[in-house]
Image (tube, protein in one colour):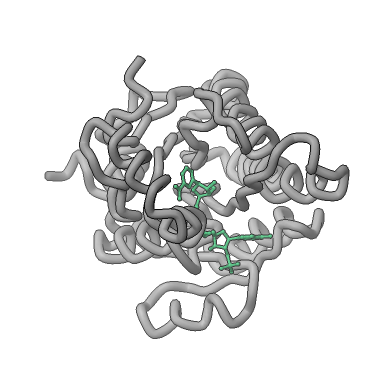
Length: 247
Ligand SMILES: NC(=O)c1ccc[n+]([C@@H]2O[C@H](COP(=O)([O-])OP(=O)(O)OC[C@H]3O[C@@H](n4cnc5c(N)ncnc54)[C@H](OP(=O)(O)O)[C@@H]3O)[C@@H](O)[C@H]2O)c1
């Protein structure tokens, strides 16, 4: 159906070398989009070219990365239709064990990179007088509490607020800014669960659909938010968690 069409759209996905980002990169490519996908290590993006995906290297622990990354797309393309801010790191640790260095690193990768990538993208599109679409990958931990992810959760909550504020600030320029809040998704980020079968079972039991999500479970909502089917939706967060956070 045309409403859900993303064919020929130029899409940049960060953190796309593995997990959720990789599933989105492959899915958008299959749907006919022109995909630029970034990873933090040169070796982690090597698979992309063989799949017809444009590889980019971007380490968001370095403050200069967002501006450089966004510019590298405009060096090749006249526009960027969709920016998906997906790159992220987790920090599962009790608050008393978290250092300032930990906080600075996770803020740089999970929060500041989203802020600066989005602002650089907005400025470039505004210069050209064309609209844009941003999809931020947050987390249900940005909404509900957990007992050993305080700083990670705080960065994800901040992303939900950033989404609402950018949506309001930039609506007049034709920008739509939304977020997706995944629950437990089977990726490297949650691989520790497999080492603790008791905990994994407890997590599955707490999820009404009785399974962890697959990276591909995030693709459908991302395609929807990138397509004209969602043209009247902005500032929102789509929760994709198998029902875990139903109040
Ligand atoms: N998995 C879950 O259950 C879950 C739940 C809620 C939200 N999320 C969010 O979904 C997003 C993707 O998570 P995932 O589960 O797919 O994680 P993942 O499998 O660990 O993949 C993380 C991705 O982020 C990239 N990345 C890590 N550090 C980076 C840095 N310093 N600079 C640039 N890129 C960096 C990695 O690139 P390299 O491989 O090149 O290092 C990789 O592509 C994250 O924002 C995460 O917080 C995940």
